[in-house]
Amino acid sequence: MSEPETYRLAGRNPMTEAEEIAPALQRRSTRRDASADQADVFPASPMLDLKHWQALDLYRGILLLAIVIGLAFLASIERALDQGVTAKEIEANLPGYARMIFNIQPSEWRSLYGSGVIRVRDFLLSGFLFAAGISQFCWRKRRARMEWKAISMFARVLWRTLVLVAMGIFLQSIGSTSTRWVFTDPLSLIGLAGLATFLLARGPVWWQLLIMVGLLFGQYAWFEFSAPVQYPPELQPALVDEDAAPDLREDRWAFQRNIADRWDRGLLSQFPGQPDVRYREAGRTTFNMIPATVLMMIGSLCGWLLFLPNFKPLTRTVCFAIAGGGLVLAGVGADQWICPAIERLLSPSWILIAGGYSLILFAACHLLCDVLPAGGLFYPIRAVGRNSLVMFLAALLATNWVGAELMKHAGSIVELATNGRWTVAQGPLAWMACSLLAALCLAWLLDARRCLIRV
Image 1: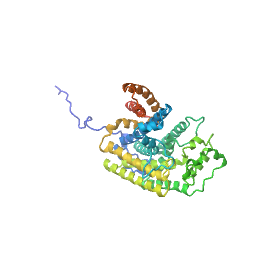
Image 2: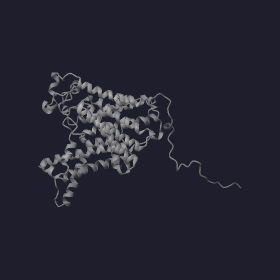
Image 3: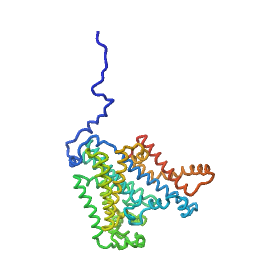
Image 4: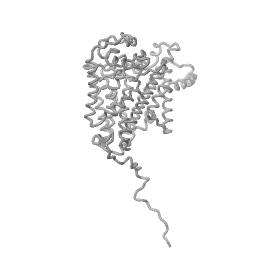
């Protein structure tokens, strides 16, 4: 009689071991591809190469929710003014009104107020550029592990640049009677700087630092050593009032009196209907992509530090915080003695300050998500940052409208529940809460359905 069949545990228990990494991701290619020249700088580490950094999602989520809250606050104040409420009444009844107004309005021209004080709105674009640098480095690491060829990676980055530039032109043209061919929208700037970063952020760290210093010094020399700006007659009608910044009229970094503005007018005048007076009111130029590349390269180096296998999370956090503090101090000093910190031009001193603040904020997010870890407590915010492109477009085009509709119903209910004691202070706060709720619900729905939209 044959022995009955028996079952025994295999030497390898699949229920207790981590899932094996796919062979295609385990192999190190011997081809000379986009990552081969960085093999010594970025050591092989399969698990790190595939890691999803919650700190980056939290970082982007904070920036996106700041946009949602700022837009809702401005819309609520505008509505209150239309209903006959005076600005003094709003300021008297709404706690923190002056601080909110300060942070959601762009700077007049110079962007540094006192010792290192900047506006939240000024920081948002710089913060996204920094985050885009980290994202691109993570993307390159993963694609290198998947053995993508260099030409395939370049084609993908080029396609992403074209899509982001087209979306930026579309957003800039909203409210215009014709296409506004400008390239200073945040999406356009991220796309152009992303392409430049992909081409320049290579080789040893010291070489990348040298490139960054060279770009900032080149921008400084271009402004400081250029001849006084002279506009040809065909560009004069596009000038905004000279008295907009009288204290800086003779400065080479002055509003509409700097060399970048002069050459940008000549460049954009080649397009139909350009230059445009409304576009010129901000004072931004296409050449902002050069310092924006430096800020994105700072983010790329931050990503490099994330993937160093010998660094513990707490050590990385300390490095980020120390480097951020050093850049802020350097930027404040540069603003005092070298060139003014101007966010709209992304001047060298502003790049140092913004890069420092970006590192400090990312250090805090890294501490919460990777050191403690407490990332689960911030899941709603991380869900917003996980789908950053969709949430950015929603913040500009949808969440404020949804918040207004929710406010219409919620306001009536609350006013009824409080027997008509609905004050001026409650309106903006409720509107911001409704817009914030709309953004969080959309982010949760997309994340729950695993709907991640990337270019």
